[in-house]
Image 1 (spheres, rainbow, N blue to C red):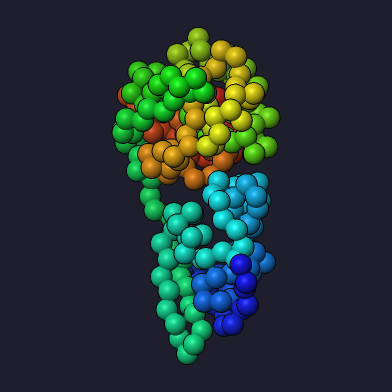
Image 2: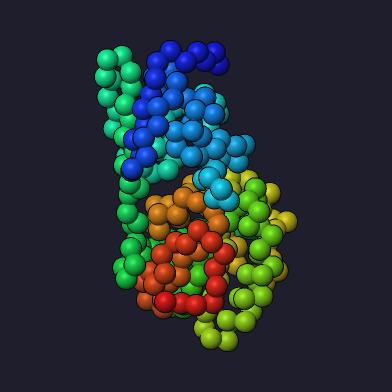
Length: 219
């Protein structure tokens, strides 16, 4: 795609204000990183160790970036230049203390896996085959074995489209579901991996999505 910056774009993100060259709302990878702090990689949008799995290529529309990050975007043209305001990300569908709506995914063999309403304390661990967090799965298996006696279950969920790519990483004896449609985002507001959310026996969110390896503490 031919790309030739023709105007300037001022991005307001909280207290941060950055002006970059753009073609309307179309940004180069470098301009996107400068304006938002997010880097465009093959695996998606990344900032530090956190990545949002989304298929975007440069030049990229700020509208598509905002949609991927689930952030509202307001734009205006002032004297031929663009101004864009990134709002705060929307709240979780299931907030802390709320009962999560039913969520059933499938494992790598096509069997249904219920993530909510199981009657057990549950940790839902979101990961992906392209994320370094895949190497933490053996540790999650050890923790699952340790907490099983306390009635706690750990379910890992691969935010991937290719089920075959997930299979080699599945830990024997551990439940692993696949979320190609990003249902975790709809129910818990999870858009980054790795993320972990803890639920109680009633399916209430007791620890909202945390962008970090989980632990054995249920708040």
